[in-house]
Image (cartoon, rainbow, N blue to C red; front, side, top):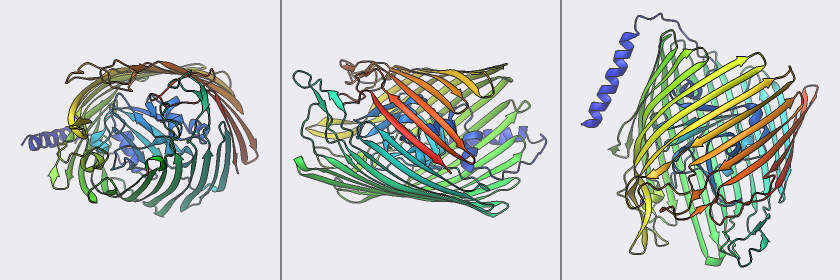
Length: 632
């Protein structure tokens, strides 16, 4: 009954807003060449903090994975189990499986464990990266609790043939090569990318867990990955377009053990196949979009020492249909349905498993006071197999009281459904729990953005405060020597984010600036014997500082990162020490008629900081990378 009342109240609010604005002037907006995904971010994310990385920044990191660019350019926390191990993303104190990663609009979170390994996402495949901070369950569904990271491939028409060769060489025998060929005509645009990366990762480190703290080389940490991506965009008519995206990747990774184990031989083979296709019909009032996607993942884990071999398979079929209705100049509605069929098999599951999830979503945007106020209401309701979940509403507002000042406010409900591992795992002294409930909670946010340009000086300031309560957090606990997941924890996460950007345009070819980002984020348990204790591996504070100088064809950037102590036990009795990193990036771009030769040189961990991201997992000291991009 409560669900029906909430839904009825939401529809009443939408209708009331529509009636109030019904008499406003009706000016049509033609949506040609506008992406539905971009509309969702631009039109229906009022109240959220949005960060879009510049194309220049993405190019500078093309030889790297998503881990490196997020570590240095975004207010996220990366937890890494060694240089060849799993990496996880955490935003605003959320868990690692509470951050959604979207690839061309498709959520990549694995149905087995609910997470995405960003170290396996090469940046050479994407042209746009948008980071949305805070919960967005009403727009993106399960897992979008701490934030959303959107990766997109952009294709341009009427550009003709062009290509790019990329090669990089780094410390510890790290090599990468990539070739990209693109074509843009009047009706068709396409791209083909092939890449390969090899790395020995045999860096020296000090083993603080061995007698005498000897300096040894990292063993069993090499990686070998290759893949291809193929993207197409067809203009069927003046008002219709079809886009397709294909991405295949395979990777062989030796998995380095922690400092307390020697002689490790375990390794993992990963294979992924991802495809999505969408059809868009643009109109003066109504824009339609339908999408079909297929995701397949194979994980083959082997440990010869333990005579262990485990194969895990997962596949997802996703279908979506949605509509944008431009009622008038001041009102916009988006509604649709998303169906996802997940299936999985594992050596640790008693039977093959599957799940059907059907989501119904609705968003409404209203502009008031000469378009200085943008209000957005959204709601999502999911049917998982034959059971409805709790609806996830949100309401947000952007207000421009002054030309240079924006005020943000939002409240939303967010959730994460249990993974297949949580529900069905058996073996290794562990047993899943089919009675688990979804993690859920409310998120509130208030922020401001101020921008000012004075002659050659340009500055912007962002302040955001946020508050989040998550109930029924899933945690694995032992009982009678058997580990099993239960809805045990409740987490209270709140904090403050500060972003300050300064830039001086000294001349038409010379600029310099400094960016400062600071995050204060207590994330504490508020139930049980460890009530009031900070979550493990979640720093209360971290800051990033970037100073850069650019002059026509060359420039450099000095990047500083500092992370507060991170607790390794739930009672906060043990912790990893704070650490700081200095990185240097230098670039040189040489134009050659219609071609360009770009060189990038990176020095990471300049001052040989000895640190750990996860307890007892070694990280490299000072290391180098040089890459060359040739565009033709």
